[in-house]
Image (cartoon, rainbow, N blue to C red; front, side, top):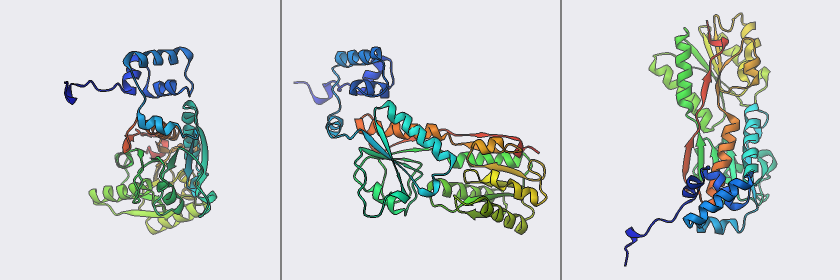
Length: 335
């Protein structure tokens, strides 16, 4: 009698995808009969599955018998007006459509404390904030959850897509130093998301490593231009030696340009300006503003892709993937 070690491993969806020369997502879509898969591709995947003797994962098959074919996307209420999150939503919706799934939106401002969580197969949480009661409920809803960026609360998501913001923020600070800045300040958001705290901590650590004072101002993520400008006005009055300013929140760098000019400073000459979030406002500003491209549409798509793979059993619970991001250097940080 053959031992367990001698028994060939059952073929997986990855084996089917490799045999059919397609991605795992395409193979999964073809076998499920969902998504935008051509007839020829579907036939190729089915033929590969028959040849290999592939049988869908039993747990995934059991899950699929009760699907609603809908996933939910949660965005904190104070973030819904940011350009980044619009791109993120489109990314989730497009990827879900490819998998034949619908998307329902949930915001913290539209889920009363005692209302039921919508009937969905899984959840995508964008930049979840620990301590948000809605986030806490969703994290403990006994549903698969994929988060965009890490969640610092007690519950653990089923999957995570995250970017190395510490590395890019350090790269940005090094660029400012190479451009001549010696007193870089940081206009931080007051949220407690992993993204916001990582930016703040990285700036402090970089300043400490270079024996520089930690110059920081804080404003709400969704602060009005008046609030942002007042914060920068106070920062420049308190520390006139500031020769570079990094803004954390989406759109904040463009919003404070008038205040910097009102203080008699010239961006790109006696003060450098950069943003931790790229957007159309950064590209169209005068001068254009150096920014970190967080690739929101791709981030949304990757979160939806991972959730779909977890639902079908093609990705293991606990999967963490990294999305690369990059810095776009523009005239605002060139002396």
